[in-house]
Image (cartoon, rainbow, N blue to C red; front, side, top):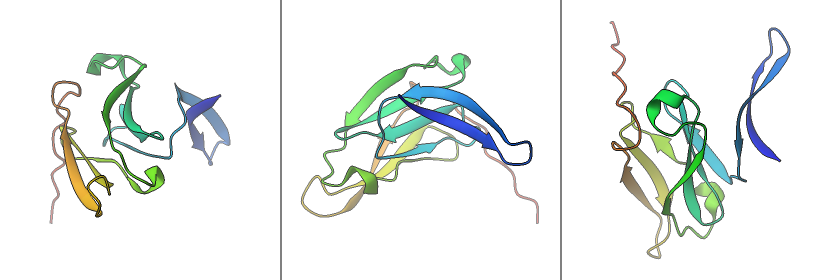
Length: 114
């Protein structure tokens, strides 16, 4: 079984976050309520928090068609409305953007004080 787990070193606790299919690489949004993983052929979203539409289940988003899925490195934008990833699907490595605003609730941006 494959899973995303949370380990807290201070208390030495290990907690199941979500059961998953096998990922070559994965990323998560700012508050860790949604994960995106690159499987062998496609990107899969896994919603951890039920109020954001994905309700602890996996949903296939698109095919990345990368020759090396481990190098796709999917990352959410700060507001969780886009996922950026790398793929060589067109013959050369390039950065792609996938819009997910209909699937993931918009997150407020953090304000940085100087």
